Length: 137
Image (cartoon, rainbow, N blue to C red):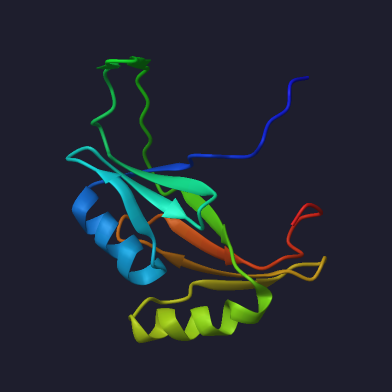
């Protein structure tokens, strides 16, 4: 098989792109790389991009100077896990609490990792996970 280098662009579909962008910038400190009326692309640790699409805005093929992007969309509450150093998890919990973000769950994983769970304004489940969650992380 040819080699894969990782997951580049996980996507969440949101009702209000500016509201979602403000949440991810303010709560998680992510910086926008690109934004327009239908999408916001956020830099995640210089290694991946979190895409926030306006729900329903990508149901048609997008034609660009370099080619086309086929239709896609999503509904319901989705999930994204973000990697954090173990020594920073308590600081993340404190930061979320200061911003009024409720922690909905905590998990201590058998391999030694820990996760906390909370929601964005669209109800998507966000996870901050420390090393030990998976054999590869």
